[in-house]
Image (tube, rainbow, N blue to C red; front, side, top):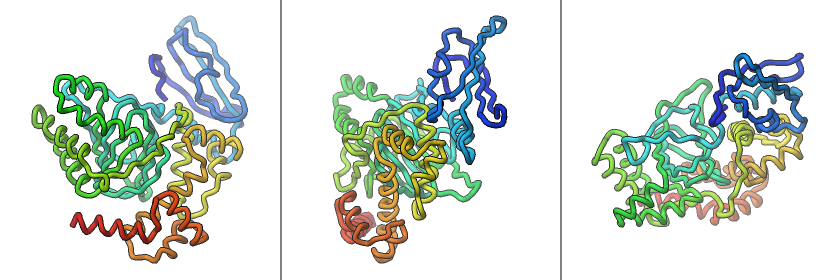
Length: 376
């Protein structure tokens, strides 16, 4: 857990009287907020908080506890809160380069539901899985390229075997939008990038030849420096800016406006893991609520406020995303796909697919096959 501007020396986590979870923080700041202002306990029951200031060490000693919900919900949520950054990820500046390029494994501390003011161009190098950008859920495979706008929450979750790690799964470019604006005053040609940044407020997934060219430029940036690196960045901007509409997929709805904070990151992260691991089976809101120690009614309101969508919407979108992948990559009949992804009624599946995707399942399959033939 990060506490910006505060000196967090250590914490201890354990059971208090075998019924409650105790969180003990030692903070060297006399102006540290009262325990109830820390914003790390989302449960319905108010947390019990004790705080004392040690004049000898100039440390606050803060103990917070909450009643222990059943089935380890408190421990799971506390683990996420203490083991993750707040969901506003802090992007360290790179003084030697105009933009930051880095790669990371999956799982990784930085690979979770998060947002940041910087723009992000993301390449998935290996594996398959599901991703969520704003209120959009899709599937990915190696070669997936997307741009995520400033402040737009996102997460890529790979399909893994127990204990599996995908080394250097991600290659990521992050940059400040102000840099593009300032650079454009000196290099007017860069103004061509501005519409792309505006459109990225919804997130854009790139398809076909545009994704392939973008992936080459992203990889080249990681192995170059100086003017060569800048050249590859300009090539990347050119590819994404000039990508035809048929090779773009806009992701989040334009009205998407979640209410984000650190505790929401922990709750959403746990729920996404549950839903993504159970997409073809039974996904129950009661089970999701129990995982984070809430009643169904409280969880429903909290999830809607935190993510901008209902839990049932999340479940439906995930199943439709899985259906799109099967339509693209298999010859299975539509009726078989319907039941495989978790729908119990074919007409209901067709109706939801048409409403969310804008095409019938058969129409979508024909379009996907056409794109594949164009690439080949």
